[in-house]
Image (cartoon, rainbow, N blue to C red; front, side):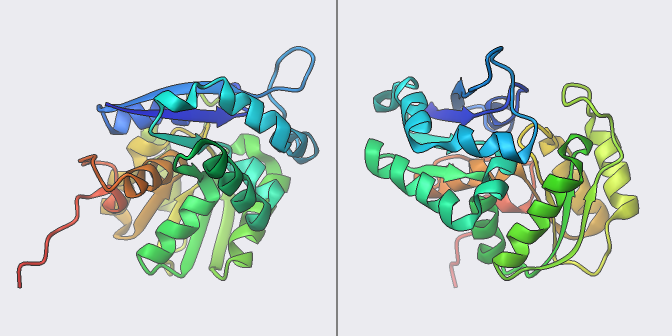
Length: 244
């Protein structure tokens, strides 16, 4: 088994659930970070940044018992949008250095995956609870990393993370995403859309990435690809050996 620690400011289940769905030999341990008096999750960009304060994140990581883990994932797409790519990478690097473990975060892993597969033109889809502010931050994030973002939209699906169904994600994306893109990114770690990735790739004939899926890919890459994952998109398909 591979044990992955999940750090997140969000109350809703996300990567802690989906990593185990995609890979049966992965176990997750989650630490939810909250500065709010009632322990609830931050809901605005202004509230998200303080939840990524280095001392707060380091203390939360220590509670995961990192010595028993193989990797740590910072699972907050929206927080990384607010931080920006440079500060996001610094957060990851600091944790990796502190605990001598592979550490990944969602948008940075998405950037790495897109470059790994040579995708340049991107459509971004966020859940409705992101709102227009975080949706715009997401588009700006990827444009800042050199990608051509053809569209960035809030999916018209159920506005409750626990009730979103893969079929409604597939239907909305298939009908609304432009076809002149190399890849579609389903962004938001609480937007549990991993089961929508494979049917969407078959429908669109395009690469489809999803927040928890790219975290799993990053963890797997950093550990030397010990996981054999099928049915969750091209990104996670086992590599074919070249015998020529």
